[in-house]
Every structure is written in structure tokens, then in C-alpha cells.
Length: 453
Image (cartoon, rainbow, N blue to C red; front, top):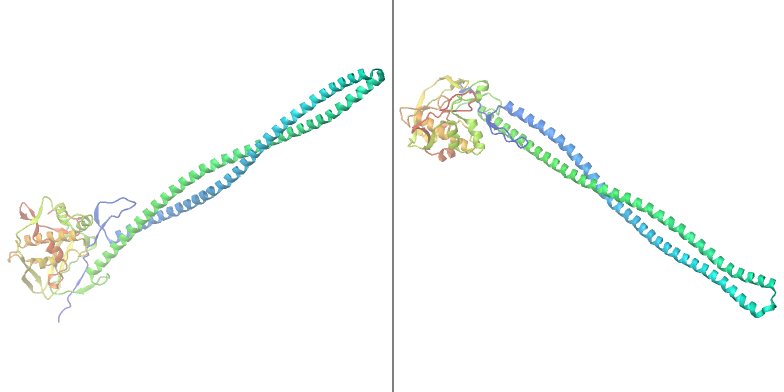
């Protein structure tokens, strides 16, 4: 009875997460993170976003308050200006009235002086007339009658002028009182006008301060909105990478992220590990997560490789176009490792050895998701080509390479050749040291690894 060919899938390669930009500060290190670590970072970003949103609300309220105060102050200015203009008009009118009253007073005073002069002249003329008439009439008028007549005449003239003088004096006194009243009113108006002018100046200074406050608040709001946008973008990026990581795990597990087992096609190889070691690979040479992060930061494939392999040269090499592979057919294959180091495995069924195209072999590698940056995948292909050529002694038929984690995981026999673009763009490129192929080892990350190839 044929046994179902199933194998527990537990080895998961995690996407690297470039520490996101927080409030404008870019973190330059590259590190691999677990889903829990990503979730922790998302929670931190959400907390920071909540704090920023709270500050933003306070800043927006302060801005609204300043804008209302500014609007009220600006509306008060026209009212004050109108009141000041009205008072100034009253002051100007009072000053004109004072001038008129003062001129009238001068005229009345002159008229009074003129009447007093006329009174004196009339008395004198009456006396002269009386003396002349006395000489003509001579004895017609006796001494007592002369005195009476002179006194009556003089009294009549003096009485008429005196009445006019008294009227003028009363009018002059009234004018003086009116002038005093106008001057008092003018003084009060000038004081009120000065107070309003001072209040207007204070209000204008307040408007300047409020405008500065509004501008500052606008800057605060804009800055906080920018921070909120950055934080939300970080959360979105982390969530997207978290989703991509979950999707990738589901792709590896083949059960929608729920774990379990799946049938294997002939030649398909899966591997398993435990705990944190699922993310470490064998710990030697190029970090696949590091390559992902460097590619995200604009590094090219050659830069990535020379970063991880000390003193090497990336260039063309007279490589064989075919290699020999071997794999087990018709049975499940188990390969186990712990702490980044291979620790053996068990194989069942017949072993198949055959000759294949090197490009076909490389395109079927299951070492890196094809959704990762092209430069990272190109670096992976160059390292994988170098490893395969060295392992097979440049395609020597007597040196076959396995398709398991003992060598390099390849799904060539399942027809998965999604990496052909990266293969073709790195045609014949290898890594050498002193002209010789290096043992281009690589792993998910190098947290638990040592040395360089």
C-alpha cells in the first residue's frame, strides 16, 4: 500500500523589516523580525500616533481660539476708528465755536468800550451846550433853574449809555461762560479721544500678537499633521509587510497560514526547524534578510555581495552551462537542522541523478521569494550559482548537487522557474577570491552565525 507522501512544514523564511521612519528620523540598520516583533512595533507606532493626534486636537483648538480672538479684535478696530472720528469731529466743532465766541467777546468788549466813550463824550457835550445856551439866555434862567436843567440833561444822556453798557456787559459775561463751557467739553473730548486712541493702539498690538499666535499654531498643526501622516504611513507599511509575511508563511505552509501538511511532488524538498532557529538559516555568509534590506535602500547586487563576502570579486566566469543533480524519487524526504547548523536527515526511495541546465536549476531555487527586490534576488542568484559551480566542480558530472537544504533547496523538478529574470540578468556572474570560486554560503540572517565565506 502506497503511503501518502506528506511532510510537516515548519521552516519559515521571514521578510526583513527596515525600521520605519519615526518623526523624520531614518533608522539605517537592517534586521529580521518576527510577526510578534512587527506587531509590537505597530502598537508602538499606534501609541505614538495617538499621542500626536491628541496634540493635534489641542493645537487645532488653540488655533481656532486664536482665530476667533483675532477676528473679534479686527472687528473692534473699525468701531473704535468710527468713534474716534466722531469725537474728533466734535472736538473740531467745539474749537470753532470757541473761536467764534472769543471773537464775539472781543467785539462786544470793543462795543462796550465804545459806549463808555460815547457816554463820556455826551456828558461833556451836554455841559458845553448848556454853557452856550446859558450865555444866550443870560438872565432868562436864574441860578437855581440852571443847575436843575443841567443835571436833568446830563442824567438823561448818561442813563441811555449806561443801559447799553450794562447790556453789553451781560452779553460779554454770557460769552465768557459759553467759552469756559466749550473749553471744558473740548478737554473732556480730547481726554476720551486719547483713551480711545490708546485703546486702538493696544488693540493693534494685540492683533499683531494674535496673528503671530495664529501663524505659530498653523505651523504646529501642519507639523503635527505631517507627523501623523508619517506615523500612519509607518503603520500602513508595517501592516502591509506583516500581511506579506503572513502570506509568505501561508505560501510556505500551503494551508493558508494554518500550518499542517501537504503532498509533495516528485523532487520537491521541504525542510523543518524549531523556534527562533526557523529564521536563522545556517548563520554563515550572506544574510538574505540583510540583502533584502540593503536592496530596499538602493544597493546593487554586487554591493550586497562584497558587503557580506570579504575581499571578493563579482564578475564573469567561464562556467559550465550544465550541472548534475540528484534527488530522491517516490518517497518523502526529511531534512532537519537546529540553531542554524545542518544536523543530518533521512531519505527513502530511489536516488535519481540527471544532467540539467544550470539556468533551469537556478530558476527553480526556493531560497528567496520572487516578490523581494530584484537586486536582492540577483545577489541570491550570483551566490547560488557560485555555490553550485563550486559544489559540482564547475559542472563535473561526477560531482552532483542535491536539491535539499544540505545543498540548496530547488523546486526544479516541480516546474517552478519563477526566477528566470534574475537568472538571465546575472548570466555567468560568480563570486571569486584570488581567481577561485568561493563557498558562497548564505542564510536567512546571521544573528546566530559566524565568520564570512
